[in-house]
Length: 505
Image (cartoon, rainbow, N blue to C red):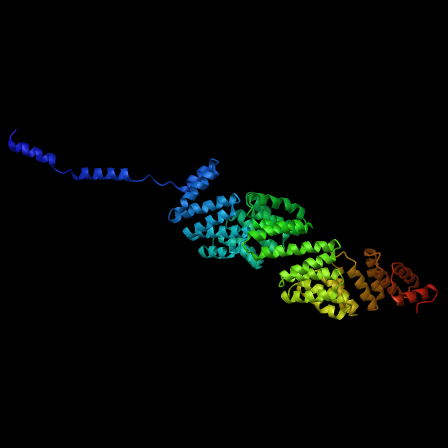
């Protein structure tokens, strides 16, 4: 080979690779160094759930929380739902919190709304702030509206709560929206519609706790506490952190007359609820009821002792003072009751039962004039409470304000739900006092049928017949009153004279 040819060949061998060859090698290097595509953790978790591996799904979602951005937020949101379904409320709240921090817009609103509702079930006071944050993130979102409906119930705004829940339901909120509607309707006092909403929520999602707790509350309030207890026990067994279930269980046991049993549930709720005022108030209510159970068993002194101690521990509680006053009235200690009830209505001017008790205490002392104002206050606060109206009517009759008494007591006796004899007796008394004897007779006949052993009812009936100059019926009714121990001297003197043959003039 000639020297020049050999040099050319060597130059070609030493020349750099072509541009195409360089690109090919570079692409091959990138391919070798590129990581495997990242799998969607939510999709992976769903696959594990479908295979029955819930623990594996939780592990997958938990491992994804450290990732940046919306992917971690979506994993946290799904993890929260899964934790909630398993009754792990605290862990669910933690996951929803992470989701709320990493997501934006609609999904952020859902995460915060779900967190608010779960915090509510858990008895946490910051549920309201979470609901407001959810609404700020997505004002038209289903879950923010559901959360706000719960908040409005707690705030006492039932009408707005109903509107929010209905809007969420119409937007496809399903079982959670139905449960929120049930709570709102219950707050409005429509127990029948509330029960329907809760049952629809339970049918749509049998795993949800909120509608079960709500239904139990409706059952208790409608006189079916025995049906509520097993429902609540199932929730407590499935989710020991459901403070709301413990609270409702305590109320249910109170309704069943088991204050001592209720104390355990109320104590657990108060301990777990992170100083929630509602749980603390319930615990105090149960302690009052337990003390008053001793009163019902004839142990008034023990009840007074326990309630006085409770009052010293909670001097700002109107309810404790009311309970103590009830025990004092049972001991005929009107002055002690007046002192406690005066302070109770000072602490809570809208405490109708306190005003009514104050009227009872003054009436017990024989001071009818002083009893009238507190009775009137109780009726003004709770006009639908027939017992309060009956007490006011009786006091009006005793104060000889007969026309007012007749008007008040006619309202009471005209209500088919009123079945006690006291208002009928007082109404008869008012008719007799107003000299409307003919109208008094059927009223007092009703009274004696309801209370055949009431000497007072028979005495008023005797006076009605006396006013009608009906000697035979006067003697019969008067003799019955006397046989029952009636001691009023004027009636007995007239009865003796008429029985002796004297005519009624």
